[in-house]
Each structure stands twice: as C-alpha cells, then as structure tokens.
Image 1 (tube, rainbow, N blue to C red):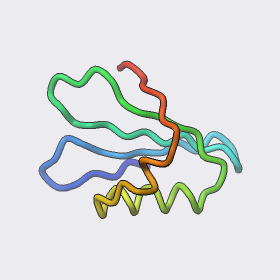
Image 2: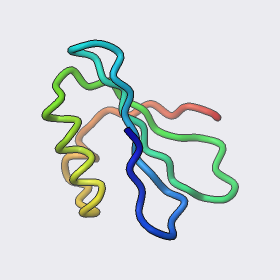
Image 3: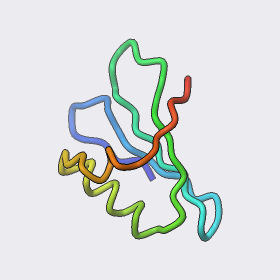
Amino acid sequence: MTVSRANAATFIQTYRNSDTDYQVEVHSGAADAEYFSTTTVHDVNVVGQLIWDWLENDWQRLDAIVWEQQSL
C-alpha cells in the first residue's frame, strides 16, 4: 500500500512479506533524493499507526523506530 499527500512527492508505503513481516518505507520526495528509509514491522496494527502518524505529520512514533537508509 502506498499513501501520499495531494500535490506532494513524499510518500509512505508498506509491503506485506508474510502474516507477521511488513516492510515500511518513507520517501522524502526531494527532487534529488537518492535514498529512502525502511524498517521491518511485525504487527499490522503498528503499520497502520505509522501510516496514520505520517499522514498527521506526527513524528513521535516514527522517530522512535530504527530506520535503515536505502539507495534507489
């Protein structure tokens, strides 16, 4: 699932790898961005909370996650 804001290049998305393994990615949307941040979550409810927090621009829970920087 990919979620974005209207008229913005930034987005958050998730991939379901199994019943208990979800990859979550946050893309900054910067025109020159070559990297994005990714993490693995093992609870679908946490995935939903992270996506909702991102939509609300509430970074408290998102900042508490260990993110890995990946290149495009």
